[in-house]
Amino acid sequence: MNYRHEFHAGNFADVFKHAVLCRILQYLRSKPAAFRVIDTHAGAGLFDLKSNEAQRGGEWHAGIEKLMAAKLTGPVAALLAPYLEVISAVNESGKLRIYPGSPALARAWLRPQDRLIACELNPTTAAALSRNLRGDSRIKTLTLDGWTALNAYVPPKERRGVVLVDPPFEAESDFARLASGLAAAHHKWQTGIYALWYPIKGRREPDALAKRLRRLALSKVLRAELIVAPLSDPARLNGAGIIVVNPPWTLESELSVLLPALAGVLARQGPGSARLDWLAGEAPATLS
Image 1 (spheres, rainbow, N blue to C red):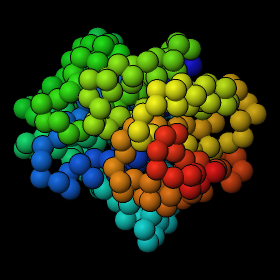
Image 2: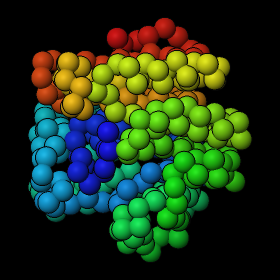
Image 3: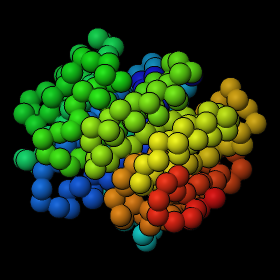
Image 4: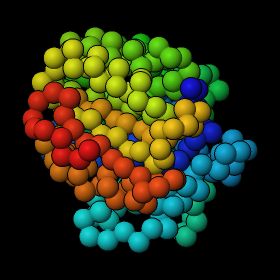
């Protein structure tokens, strides 16, 4: 599929992924003990929405721009506020030009005792990541393959934290590698939170991933999916999913509020839809 960050920054899939990530970070920050964020496929960290790459598809217009223009109220507004505040903080007042990727979002949640490891294999992108996050002793940026990082940096000494796995899906095998990489990392760090992002064009690859994860027999695995267009066009990105292993106890109820709202705001064709269910542990599906 080749999901390169710079071409898709700020699109609906980014909004969905980062809204979920920020809820996890909010939970980790609510307790005094230190935590670590491990971002295996970090990208450049900050993205210029006026760049040639971002302008080519203009996907951010139907993503973050659309969300920021929506009239959000009540619990939905409260749950999205921390995420949107970070975006506002990196832009001039009233303007939207810079979109913060996952490492820049994570930086906003770090306290003095917390740490971030951000990995990126592409040398040019890794250099941009280093520049964008420079000057912060809490952050280490590495030019390193994300699949290697997934296994190499767990468990962290803090013993609390989240591993975000967000590969570019340049190879069809990336879906299988999500499951095998998780299995190896989870064997070393069974109490960590793992957030696995994946694109949805059709159902074949996401459903196969779910089957692989079920076979791992993990204790708690929550699946969240956002569909913005019918899955009838396999050439387009029609949705995205995040599978969270060991999710915070607050996350299911938060996503049961957020997902329908995001589906309503970000739908590209038709009303949009959402799924929230457990692949392992806890309870039956809450959204389908």
